[in-house]
Every structure is written in structure tokens, then in C-alpha cells.
Image (tube, rainbow, N blue to C red; front, side, top):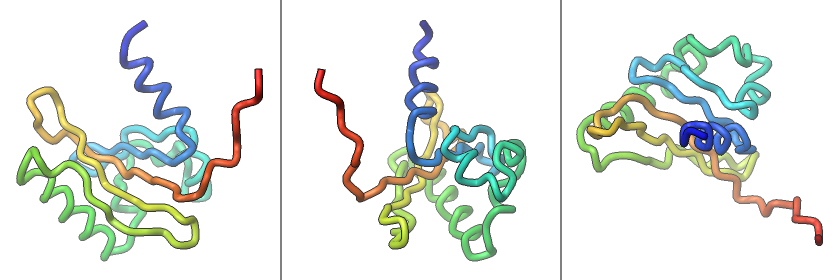
Length: 123
């Protein structure tokens, strides 16, 4: 089995929305949690459109500035963008780089602060 299948499975099983964009801000992938979360905005139909169209001017500027920051150094790879109090989660933007460390895109990473309520059943 190819390693990419494992990576895809990791992202697709994530309970948090994962939306991957190229450096032109085009949505190139949404995991099932993202498709469900953004269903009212178009769900999977958002793939191939600009992520900037989903944000207000202030947020568009923030996204563009962060991508510029990613491009300034290969050391600039993750930044906390805000805390969502309503959902008790932190939101980060993460740089995606190829093998030569060239910036090829980015994604938004959500980390919930809530304790997971599901537990493994005793075997």
C-alpha cells in the first residue's frame, strides 16, 4: 500500500475540518469533516474555488499576509490565527512544502480543547 493512502486516511478520519489550498488560494481538497461543516456554503462544491471568496476582506488580508510570511523563510511553517471561544478550539495556518521546501500551499488546522468523550471499549 502506498504511503499516500495512509496520509489520506489520517486526514479523512480527522474530526476537524481540513481544507487544503494551493498558493493561489484555490481549494484543492476538503476532508469529510470539512465537507459536512461547510455544507451550507457549498460543501464539496467549494473544491476548485478560491478560499478568499469564503472570507471577509479583513480575513482575506490576514490569509494573504500569512502566505507571504510562509514564503519569506522555510522556517515559517505554522502560525496561530485565532481562538474560537464558541467551539473551544485553536486555529492555525500551516504551510505545505514540497521536497525542496518550496511553498506549494497551506491548510487551516483546528485543535479542539475539549476532552474527547469517546473511549475505547474494554476487550
